[in-house]
Structures are given as C-alpha cells and as structure tokens.
Length: 217
Image (cartoon, rainbow, N blue to C red; front, side, top):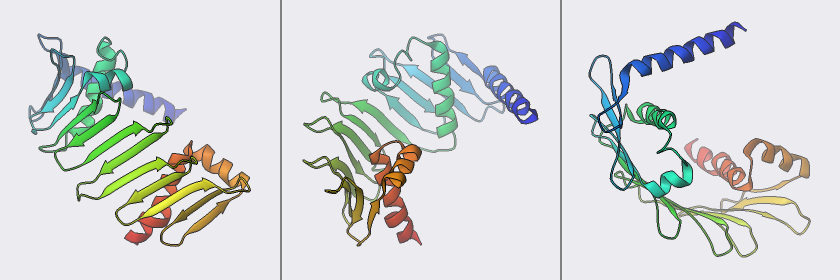
C-alpha cells in the first residue's frame, strides 16, 4: 500500500512539475522551458498538419501527418494526448544533441523512419500481406526480416542468416548459418508465445540470444 501511495504521489508531483513548465504558445503549439532556462523545446504543427519536435540542443524530429494518423489517431485533435506525446519526446531527446529524424508513410503505406546518423527502417507488406522489415544501420549494415513463399520467417544481414519455421511434424524449428538448430516442443513454444507475443518477436529474441549476444561475449 505504501509503495502504491508513493508511486501516486510521485506521479502527481511529476505531472505538476511539468504543468508548471508547459504551456501553449499563441498558435496553440506546446512549448517547454526548464526552470533553469537551459533547455527549451516545442512541438509545432505546420500547414500540412505535420508535427515537428525541436529543442535548443539542435534536435529536430518530424512526424508526418500520415504517420500520425496511422499510429496516433486523433492526436492532433486531443490537446491532452498532444501534451503527453510532447512530454515523451522531451524525455526521449533532451539528452541528445544534433539529432534529426523523420517518421513518415509513403504512397504504398510503407512506414519509413530515417535519421541523420545513417539509419533507416522500412516496415511494409509483401504481396501476401505479411509484414516486411528492412533496416540500414549507422555502419551501413543491412538487416531484413520477411516470410518466404511457405510463410517461414527469414532474418538476413550481410553476415548472418536465420530462419524460424514449422517442420513436417508441426514443430517450430530455429536455425542459423552458424550451425545453431533448436526444435521446440508445444509447451516450450506456448511459453515463448506467452512471453513474446508473436513469432517475429520470438525470432528476434533467439537471434539476440544465439548470435548477437554471443558475438559480444
């Protein structure tokens, strides 16, 4: 009970603190200024209803309207939700410097997130309606996740390939180019699904455990 009360008091104090520093400018856009006046930020809407978060650390994050409509419906019409969105951007980028990024959706409904550090993520769908992921990292490495004609998940980089699929006995099997191969019983698979939600996130977990983390070790 004491922990719950402490959390509620902390949350109330946090929002009260923000409320004292947050306000709308004459155009109705949220602005923020720290008590010591060292940090300032704003979230401005342009004539195309895109939102741009910027601050005096030279960060600038643009959220195009089509992206907002897809992932934050009614945000533009909801002042409270807009302030919450603004608070989140402040917490995320206030310690960054000179970071620029754009969140957009193209004419083919592909989500594109790119930044000035050479990173880009594209999330779309193949001709069968399955989600596809294509990422370019800051070092130029390419990463893709997609399904083959049989619905098997494939993960591929310049150096690594991994798959997650069902065998002829209806068992889920993970394998990669380093020689790892795992077969999952129904009970183990159910536990993984309960923890990670879907086979795409399960594949990412397995790749992290058996490829990425072991390379670091």
